[in-house]
Length: 522
Image 1 (cartoon, rainbow, N blue to C red):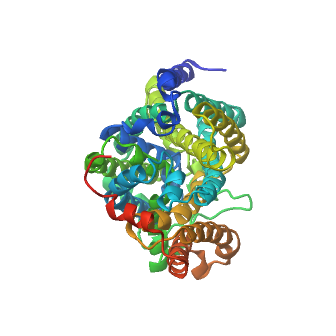
Image 2: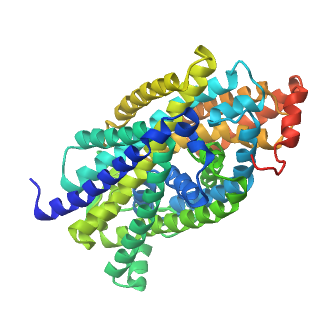
Image 3: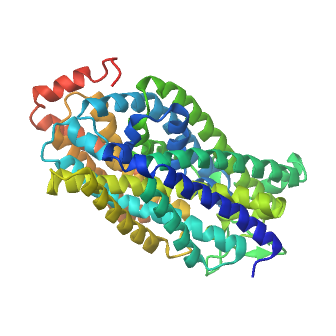
């Protein structure tokens, strides 16, 4: 039964739900006028909306739950190096990919999906490249959607003690509804609002956490007693019982000796930043920006947002361990530290508004994953392979069917409430980053790249991630590195080797490459 406080928290969240669904209705007519409008907004999105939409769609539940939870569980090193890699990857992606992809996607058949661009880049009339890319997208985005739905269910369970599965499904259905109605424009508009909410929520909880501590010296002293917790060259290791619960003695959680965090581990963790080059939900924002000349403005906004947001997320986890050292005793429950702090420090209605940041993070990402997957299947597989003369209306019907299938699979993935969000996200991030990252970079910068090289690179990246994660990584030692790093390197090598071994692209493909950066506005 709801208390008065719970009712006010729910009221704030209900207002949020109404706003995002209303936005979906607002854009329904315009988005459904054509596939160009539905999938890429007619390339008329301004720099502010592009920047915050790209980052909000990327920063799923791991920003407000995964990153703080990782910091709370094992200290500064793992989360710190991850965020440094992500910040560098964000800047590099905007600096070296965004403008080129915006211009080339127009030159290459006015492509409206990332997967379609990959085929158009090589004049692949059989759509082999885009079909393979669409299948890979479908595989990893189903997993990604599941991580977002986990966030929704865990939020309501932690806030109100309600059934995880029921509210995970309700959150998933709301995301499905406004994505179905409004397409790209509704997703971008809600992402902008959600990006603002996430930023403010993080700032409020950090400021409140600092105010709750006993001072910087006392906090640092308490955390320094945990071996490796504040170090960037070692890692804290919670002592667990047979059920995966951290052991508590005299009211304090127990830690073992600090684990090693050497150069290879640092490089492996920094490699998270490589994933950005292959993230379809970010790349499509580059394609949809109003003008290539506005990329510089978007880059500045995006980088500032990312750096400040991730710094706040890390601080929340670290300060949370100081304030509530023995409250969250499993890796999965540690990811609710943001919610715990919000409930304790804020009035009920304000708490509801702040935790909407978690909904914003998960919903903005899930809607993008649904949209990208739907567009890949409907535009690149259905119209590209099976029915080339399909009308826009028919493509949109297939898109909606695909959204429903991905929704169901994402719910299946999310049904285990003990799933660790950071782990689920890291797997999908590696898969997409390795499959599409080297392909994107070389497609934009290497004239000699061939269609066969593109196919080899995608398949190599996907296979290496799956094999490394499931068979090689468990061996530990030097093999325990993040699977994105070896997969990214081997994918790039496969593209280069196979391209050099196959016939040079036809002259029309080379002419497109030679002129796609011409400065006339596309």
